[in-house]
Structures are given as structure tokens and as C-alpha cells.
Image (tube, rainbow, N blue to C red; front, side, top):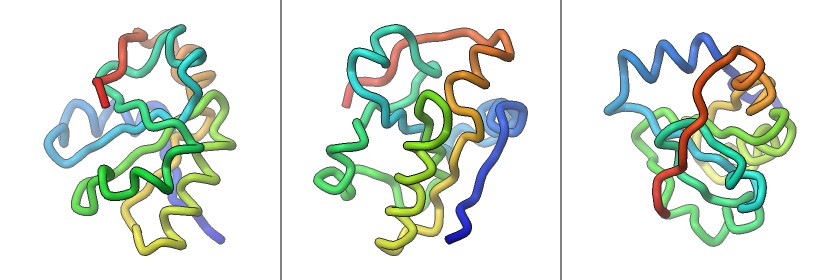
Length: 110
């Protein structure tokens, strides 16, 4: 299954231009998120995604992020299998984000 992906630069562009049409979801575990997250990302751990599907916007671009892009890619595939065509994987995940020297913040409260 093909999943949509963007890189860090494309995400930054979306964050600067289409904030109202963008939702960032961090699917890492709480202990990982505690070390820092993309500012204003929502924390929905991968294991709880099926239980919280209704919380994920159906009319915004939804960018999913994890440590490396593997788990978030699986989440994108799952969302697509469940009728969501707005899921986008952050290629390289938080490793790419921090590797680009970008600021870490805290996630939004769920």
C-alpha cells in the first residue's frame, strides 16, 4: 500500500502556511514524547489509535510522526484502510526533525 509522505521542510512549510488545515499527531509512547515533540503536535500513542479514531480530523491534513517514520507509516496505512485519505507520514520522524536542528516543544493535551 502506498502512503503519502512529506519531509521536514515540507512540514515546516505547511506549519507556516496552512496551520488551520493541519493536524500533527505524535504516535510515540509517553516516555518518548516526554523527551520533546514537535510543538503543538497531539499525542495519540499508536496502541490507542483504533480507540481514538473519532478524535482525528477527517477534513484536515493529518501528519503522523514517530521516532523514525516506521510506526507512523504503519498508522497512516491503518488510517487509509479505515477510510481516511488525509493521513501523511513524516519521513524520518523525530530523528529527521531534530537532525534538522528544529526546536522541540510539548504536545497539546489530548
